[in-house]
Amino acid sequence: MKQIINIAAKEFRDYFISPIAYIVISLFLVVTGWFFFSTFFLFDTADMRNFFSMLPIIFSFIIPAVTMRLFSEEMNVGSYEILLTMPVSFTDIAVGKFMAALLFSACMLLPTVSYPIFISFIGDVDAGPVIGGYLGATLLAGAFCSIGIFASSLTRNQIVAFIIGAAICFTLTILDQILFFIPSAITDVIAFLGADSHFQSISKGVIDSRDILYFLSVIFMGLFGTYLVMQEKN
Amino acid sequence: MIQVKNLTKYYNNFCAVDGINLEIKKGEILGLLGPNGAGKTTTLRMLTGFFKPTSGDILVKDLSISEDSLKIKELMGYLPESAPLYHNMLVFDYLCYVAKVRGIKKEKIPSRLKELSDLCGLSDIMHQSVDELSKGLKQRVGLAHAMMNDPEILILDEPTSGLDPNQIAEIREIIKRIGKEKTIVFSTHILSEAEATCDRIVIINKGKIVADDTTQKLKNRAASGSSINLSLYDADPDDVVKLLRTIAPDIEVLKKEPVEKGVASFEIQSSTSKDFRKQIYLKIKETNWSIAQLTRESQTLESIFHELTKGN
Image (cartoon, rainbow over all chains, first blue to last red; front, side, top):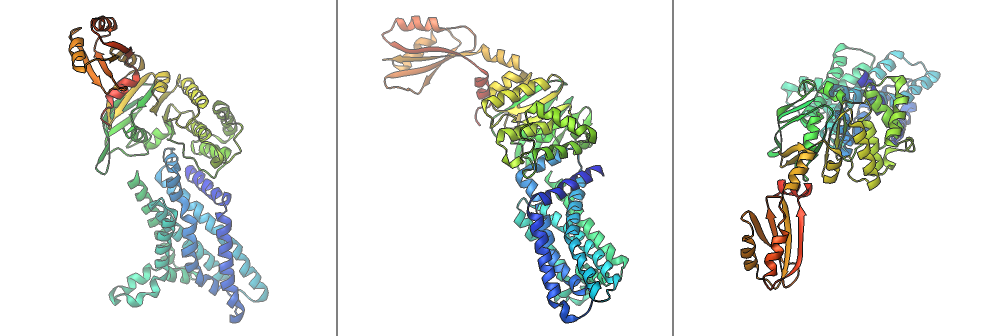
């Protein structure tokens, strides 16, 4: 546990040492801010539904950019060798890096909390969907972080890691919109695998254990995949 | 301290390390020598647990690397080849991070960093970013990293490569100093370095151990054989070989490529330590050839190394 914190703290600091953090956070805020507020006054309702409904698509490109360096860079520079010869287990490394990426995503989301606060001045905001939305966003970020870390562990090239990660995240996001092309016998199963519907139902303020379980199992599978890749490379 | 049993590593179909057996005692400084691609780095990486062996086992203080690799990693300090450090961190931050992961108590970290920076000469660069450092300085930071928790075993992969002569001398000095209490395994392809610092030398070639002896014994072995270089004007090579064979039955005369025109060159090898120069001179005096060169070369560690790793 101590080692997880050590690794997470180091990776988290690393984000803010390099310019990546500031670029990614500003990009995220500009994109979400623009898309949200450009139509906000047209709808004339004091809620955050539009903001949350576009999060999965934005996250599926932003989060892999956040996680792409976590393993690829280490393998490219060779510091991976230093990391693995210190007394840390594979689990410590995978979970530590995951925690750092998740914490970073939370930092990215934090400034957007000002949106509901400002909206509450001009109208009545229903707290339920907002709290649910942020809970769902955190879970979604976790799931995508874990997928991004898995993608990063596969290759020493950060760009390849980004593309693999974004491809998986994007597929999960649009899965329930392409059910049309899928044989009707398995549509229920495929629909359940999509991330978007689980996220949207949490962000309505309905906290269902199935949705939470879905995100937790995606996180687990991503990290377990990373663990297996590390073991295979060893 | 360390027992290596039948260690083998395959990369796909390529056999990098082929059944190495080795026992390293406590307090020994062991030099691992070999040409490029002989399997030195692979062996060291398996010792540190970075690579899993394809077969065979490594026991460190009776702990097997396949089962207790975490405990073994706590006992070891490792300097990888070319010290790949986190390039965006400050040296101080990096060493703090290593200290924390190595389990050094928070209140002891500053004093430990002070000790290491004095030992490795880092005090001027503590607040520089790692990617601004020259290769030699990185190597020193890597050394501080390896010695962070005062490990019982130090594994150094080509610790002096890419350093200037002063730095090489410094690093050797450090190795010798800490080697008094610790077990050190290091790889190098600089023979004089191994000669100067090691208690024991292991030469590997194509993944196999071809020599394993104390430095002194290897040197003695080297001194026993000798060769004589001879160059003659106006001589027919075949006649020379015939004539010289009459001196002693156990000498071997090899014709060499002539360096100059009209000069025939030979190498005369003997398995005994006897010096044949006088006999050779006297024999040649009887003929009408003239001597261009007659020198004796005693075999050095270099020639032993060359011989053992031939055909690479």
